[in-house]
Amino acid sequence: MEKKNNYIKKFTFADQVCERISYLNKVKDYLEKQLKNMPAGNLLIAPGTTPNSFRYYRRESPQDKSGTYLDRSKQDIKEQLANKKYYEKLHTAVSKELTALEKINKLNHSDAIIHTYESLNKGLKKLIHPINVDDSTYAKMWEAVTYKGLEFDAEDKTEFYTKRGERVRSKSEILIANTLNDNNIPYRYECPVEVDIGKKLYPDFMVLNRKQRKEFYWEHLGMMDNPDYVVHNMWKFNEYKKAGLVLGINLFVTYETSAMPLGTGEIERLISLFL
Image (tube, rainbow, N blue to C red):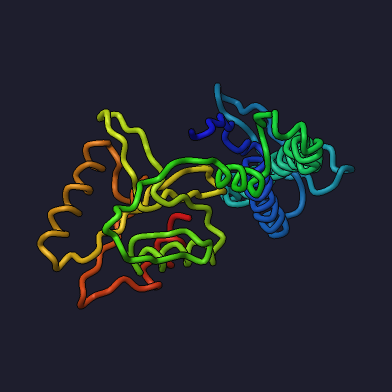
């Protein structure tokens, strides 16, 4: 029997904080570069002689109480000083938020919540369904789930074994399994999957993206130049379509013929794109 574990998805608040800090630092750098090129002084604004009109003055030092009047010909200076005031206020706001987020980030990176499970006695761990664990622990627990895969027919005399000692059905499956293993990608071979169409499917590989904590299914369609295998493979592929599994979203499919065997390049490409 497969042991059911209800894992909570990885808490991504720390990632969001880091992303926000990175963005704010870019904004801060931009503002500081702009402020270096702004004219000296500040802008004073007084009511104009008509409703909704204003008079603008440039004050270049704190001792200058009234400032120098800027007429229409000084529109460029007025706009630069106005933007300077805006950039200064924005710089203050960004700096305050950065200070707060950096404190949160420092606290969050203690990982106390995530490592609580790892700190427990082994005897306790056996009895606990952890709420939140680090990626490495999550992957180990995912791989440790027990299941009953497809049986091999008695007349099936071919024996292909992976580096992990699993018996698989073809040389191409050895290649996929070993490449996954070499890239430290957790996988299960022919693990049963219950689907909404009321059937149990056995994908060649169930693989885990440990960062996203998302499962993908990998089906290899071999011997596609053999009519008997083509019919069988397309039937399997249609079963996946009925189950709502979509290519590139939660299903990988690789193909091969005798003239175009599966290579590590295609396997590595899928790994780099999705895993």
